[in-house]
Image (tube, one colour):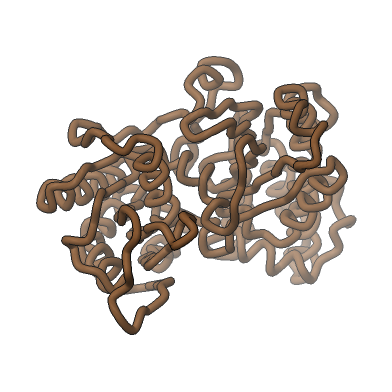
Length: 386
């Protein structure tokens, strides 16, 4: 299996299970993933296994994710990935208490594959099935790393999503800002593709930028200083493409463009997040008047960028907030976060009803009320932005 990654405790003996055991399945874009999660002796999430089969090699020749190829790859890998997750956890299928799978948003062909596999597994085992919002998985993913009490401010940045959300509780989400066009991760990928760096683009741009002068180009920082907390990256992406086309294409020029682009993204995120912090403070002022510091959380694939992490860590410190991001392996799409969403739901609804009738949803806003207002999220090459 190409680009296969396994994160597991590789138990020497069958683990002692104290609470519900949830199988999570994720297939919304170009990773086919399955994970097993339960509770440890302290009642905290315990990841017994996390298997991810990447499709990078399948999509690399095209410089981006091709939905038809992604759907076929999911179909070919899903059964094996689930089997490996159960085996790596040191459990049997009969130990599974419930199954949770991404039901959207995402590339619908992949979502359908994971959803059908999850439903079939749950039916065969006679356990409840839960359809999970992919964005909810990201919203809860920092809790895989450490306790993160509600409410907290979430910046979700990935190839298909750039949103600022007040996570007020499980199932209680209020969107403070979103992108009006491209997501931050899409801007990274498109920049890499235009410069011929290859796919996936984010890590390649970050690596190239390390050798460049970030002050060489003054790229735009959309919405800087505006009173709202929305984003726009289309203009920045276009400015970078024009700068590259006008350059001599030398190694130094490419590094300078990458570094200046990355700096512009960092400063744009910092400016928009600072506005969201003020909105979050107004919404939860009582938490800023106590000894407990609220959390500023960053999740999604772009959260793996070290310069962005450093910028946002400094932002949180300036506003007297704790900074938290998932481990790098849980920033990108994974099934552990989907299993965690299912486990959290089981904790809040012990008699949860099986959702075998839930359909795949290419668009599924985490906060439906905010999604009905401007800005209206659109579609990009890597999927829906809401």
